[in-house]
Length: 138
Image 1 (cartoon, helix red, strand yellow):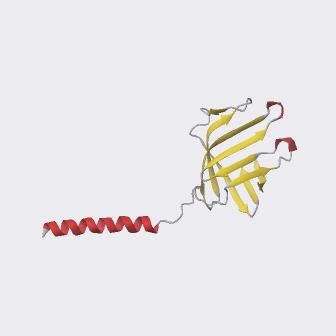
Image 2 (image 1 turned 180 degrees about the vertical axis):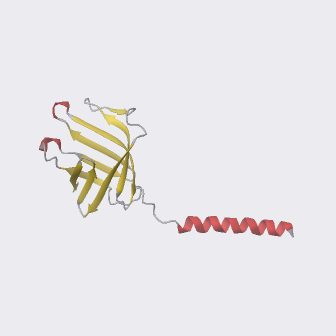
Image 3 (image 1 turned 120 degrees about the vertical axis):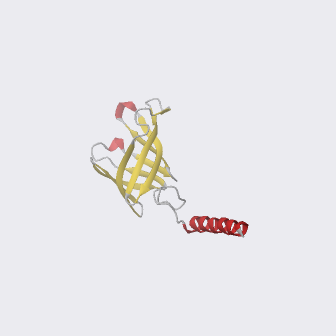
């Protein structure tokens, strides 16, 4: 009898695990194929049009590049997750003035949060300094 109860207990536990996994929906963490952030977005810097920032999001990873005057192209890359209308950025690498990607030891482990919204081909990202509007590049 004890053996039968033990087997039934294991079957019940297995059933709970299977139903738990089956009931999980798509996580809202910037990692799905239908993620509205996926793609390349070009912004417009109202102070200096030569410094138009570009974000490329791809299923939980990102690359950010901006022309910075005499320095040339500089940028960052790393990981992102989303939670509601917040995007949480974790920088892992930076691009130096020679165009070489290096591990970002300064920002490593730091998280930066932006409020964002996607409306068709328009992405708005807001931080404490203000909002930049980006257009999806085709």
